[in-house]
Length: 394
Image 1 (cartoon, rainbow, N blue to C red):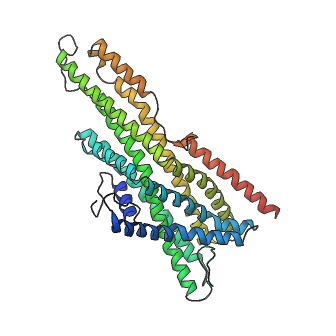
Image 2: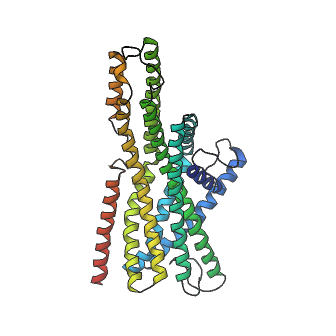
């Protein structure tokens, strides 16, 4: 594997290189002692970004158990780290299959040489790039808010450490651990999310290219005087249709693989995100009452980060389902009326098959869609009102 990973999609290229830097993408060619070193490097980053955070926050959660306000303040980052840990482990265990999926999409897109097709690929790249750039600034605002709102010799978030953090050098070590851990953890988490959502976007892009191929299947063939194709021309149409069927099968197979490879992380993320959004909204309400402006901005940015995280999954899943259902309409736009009855029957079978929508689901329970996103927001708001009622009773 080269030092820098190259890919036709910039957001996927960026996320893969970030994950490689953290050792989360260990090449299959690495063996022996080098592989042991690579695994040790992976373990270091895993513990630094995820493992130690889970330990110190679980310890803090045990100490403040029973106080709803303090438990909420401890939990909103803890749950995010637990979801990140599952994503990282999933990537390590299924790296080979994920890499094969990336290579297949890369190969398919690089074969495209039509002007319209290249424009479709560029639009997809631009969309995913804007998403990752829009996603990246939110954790930065959150971290800056935590830094500027924390008091003198006060840690960014409540956490238990096996030493006195009020004295030097314990405070400095803990403070550096939290700042560096939050920053790198957010960066790696965004890269893991971008990996999945961009793979879904590339499936959409391939379906758009397929729709373009179906619509323009006979545009370079001239009809005879009776406005029908000759036998030679129809043979070309059959070859092109066969190629479209093959590409459609490969794209749908990629979508199925995305479902299988990332089903557990997506389910975990959505389960955790509904709780995190609720907890963050509750914490935000407390900060508003205390008139902590900087802290409010920090919590608001974190809440938007969680909402964006869920939205990207739902948006890409929704768009993928739409693109897969549009294939039938694209097939109807080809000059089928100039073909034989046999070809029309074959095309009709293709149209019937493409009416089966390709969907990515949350743990096999509900499809990723904008409707799912709205339901998540509604559920989080319901949990939020329950927490507020519990606080009011106390």
